[in-house]
Length: 184
Length: 370
Image (cartoon, rainbow over all chains, first blue to last red; front, side):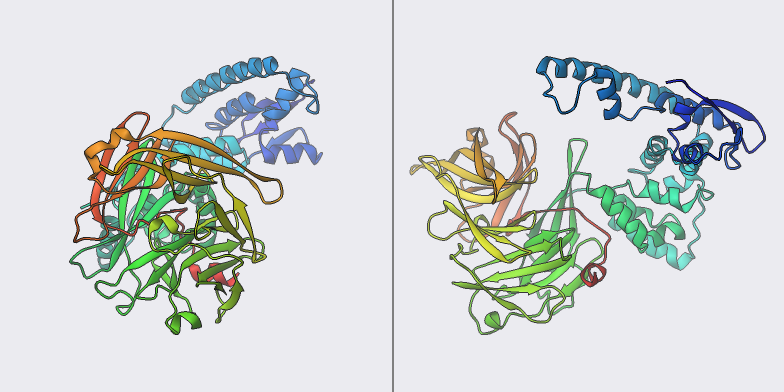
């Protein structure tokens, strides 16, 4: 497939280039492209130049990759035809290698500080990149799991806005649903 | 974090297990109010459906003002965690000291409970929100006719919950939200719910009971159409006796037990029959035999009951302690027949009615209204 280039402009007026196939990983961009409203450059007023290259990196990795459709296209197998067992096995192996490689890539990709995490979540949400949203949101969730509310507030820089009376009630809630899972 | 769109905070928190969500309510006001946000509740429930369901069973507390507690089992990364959830939200009449309750069924995070002497299905309960919805009494139960068995199910087509009370040759059915029970003719007599082996099981819109007399037949009730049919099962192998119905990975399963008799009642093996298929295409049965002789003295000498299968080869089991005076004191433990791994969780009184559930913040009232 020939790849048309798309230009994205960040909130601070910097322009970045991306292949159309990669850009299609974003629902928002896909709609703009398919809508034919493409006028040279797509402005992204909610994404800064710090974060946009990171988003493009993700799209390049995942653009045009829609799981099963790719599998059928590559294997050249009619889905109505019976799939031979040995073919399946080979494909399984390739699939496993692909998944392992992707996991490794994700690990390296996700190595950044908390501010980048916030910005990436916002960008993924704004651009409707489901995979990237899942990845970043899951990371944020893992920073909450098993933590006390105090730790969570500190981690995420949240101020408690409860009155002292409400605070007391909150302690009861914390005690009731704390992480101690045991019988007496 | 505070600058994040609510949408994203919803996304993050909806991925947490229910306990974390509840604990997180004390982080700040915005998070606190999530527990009441219908969009968040829905999002969390749809994500929870993809997690392994929790197991709940009841526990009777001795010498306590609270009649009973629930125990919820959670699997996290191969670890089993057990949380006691006190029964709350009831008024004191319903929870008199010494008054037992039983879990009759579980559906979409809601439990159907019974209290009292005639054990008429009494209420629906959400153990997470502590919301109680009392059910009308059945006329028959009010006349003192004892109930044989129960059922609780959900008609997903009409979005209605239904509760079934079974008497000797007939039953009554209640569409939750309506004020009166309707009569329901049972084509066969189901076994009496006098021990945990005889309880009903609700699965994919169908309630199952063993038919009385010989447990080679199962009576099935489609909760939407309220029509019955029967399933013929293979008989238990020689020396085995037919036990109970449980749900294993979304399928109906029958557990058969083999004991060394009569010198001692030692558990030797069990057969797990997985029932696959449907009314239209017919049913097939595949059996797996587990060697249980390794259980030996861990559990006293009483009879063992399989409460649930927790993962590939770990079972949650209960053993009634044959102490003469206490009738329902049980030892509850995890056992893997393959690894011969045993972990005793505790000894207490329980009716051993175990049910799978996906805990939810959803309000019962809202669920019944729709």
